[in-house]
Amino acid sequence: MRIGIMGLGRIGAFHTETLSTLDAVDSLVVTDPVAAAATAAAERFGAHAVDSPEAVLAAGVDGVVIAAATDAHPELILAAVRAGVPVFCEKPVARTIEESLDVLRAVEGGGVEVQIGYNRRFDPGYAAARAAVVSGELGPLHTVRSTTLDPEPPPAAYVAVSGGIFRDCAVHDFDTVRWITGREVAEVYATGANRGAEYIAAAGDVDTASALLTLDDGTLAVVSNTRHNPRGYDARLELHGMTDSVAAGLEDRLPLRSAEPGATFPGGTPHHFFMDRFAAAYRAELTAFTEVAAGLRPSPCTVADAVEAGWIAEACTLSLREHRPVTMEEVRKA
Image (cartoon, rainbow, N blue to C red; front, side):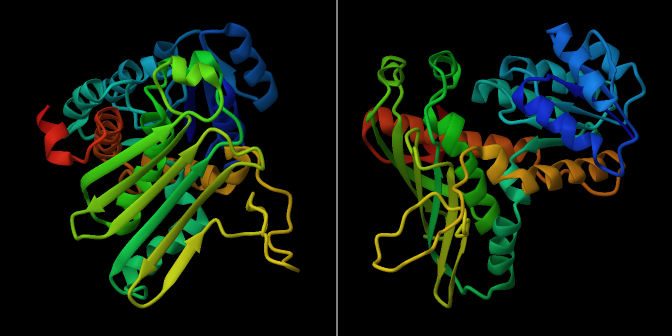
């Protein structure tokens, strides 16, 4: 299988390295607006460097991985779909919900699979938690807790164009809640504060946030996020049902210190970066994409899935701004 990679920044280079080790992948074609990045990736991973996305699509690729800047996502997704090439694209689909909906309308029914990169769907712990829900062993759920705590804030330039903490960070939690529970969000109430970096407040954003999601069956989901968790990168999930409870991310590298006398858990080196916390998930995610590209399975995370997570982020952003509960119906009609 021949896979193209568009965009060779931090995550693009990481994906290129992963793809170069997959048994299903025979060759790679890479491109980046910075020619030196493409050349370096070609030399390091034995890939073929070309000078444009168009050249990637003309190189006989069986699938493309889009890891370019967010503004380029819609154009690159649609170019690949028009060429009949299956697509893996990092989230988000586009910078705004309106653009995301345009992409959704353009790809629906087109017969070309598009997979969006929500990697927690492929983490072993999260997958096991979902299996516990699907099997019914937890009984009806009543509470879900999803947590994403970054070790430090992103740069000011990134924050200025990120769309806010709900669209940029918590959207992973929103996708997880939908996927794990199999339910849709009916209403949200969100709040936030600024506890550290002044440039985040200057950009009109918060650095610490919480959202209470009421699902369509009455289950409550609590989402917690911050840009300031210097002990490490903390991504966890709890599921509490009427029969049993489970957690994902409750392992020895959890960046949390127990205050219980004599406790030794967790005792490992804390995760400090999302790419080490979810290394296995990223590999499984790209392995799944090779199966999608080969026609062996449908996309496990569609543009429609990503749009739904985006709607929740829109509702939380509105709730934060106006200090009130917001229904999903309200934002969809706005």
